[in-house]
Length: 209
Image 1 (tube, helix red, strand yellow):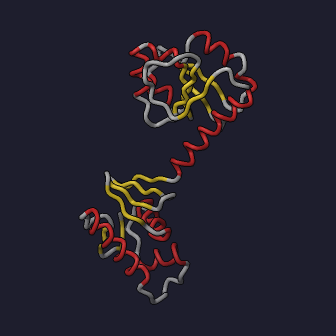
Image 2 (tube, rainbow, N blue to C red):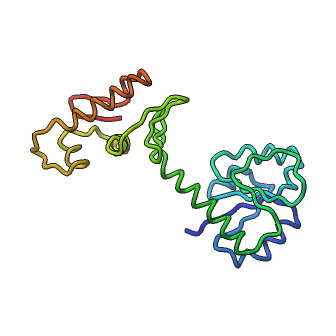
Image 3 (spheres, rainbow, N blue to C red):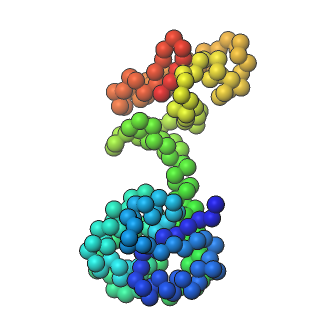
């Protein structure tokens, strides 16, 4: 599926982009005042905002409400109002540079999304190898991240034998305390930092999150 950019700009700004849209490596969609912004950003990858638009307080409030898509701010003149943005470009800009800046922003956002995972009230940062809740965090190993993801993504509890097979490729009849040791250490780290005994649940049918 092709990447897409939602443009929020003045009439002249939109016209200038409309003239080059066929040469870009992503689709360009222009903001429609008759449809809510939330609906329009649902299926796009990034938002391009003309700084002139932000001089209107209602527009500024609308743009600053976007929190799950990267916002690229296009500046042409002195800027007064504060628009929350991910990155900024200045015109004039070559077609190639503009194309690359937008694609890099989209790729960066996708990478960050794939490198973090929300589980209950926690966030796993795979790059920094941390489990976070609010302002608190603990360091987790690569194996612990794999274990948490596996338990979280499965709707049914995992038995010890299934975990051994999934994570360590052991045979089902392997006699080892590997799973118990890893889960014990992980649960202890979580309890010591977050006072949470129920992050990983252990029942007669297996382990789950």
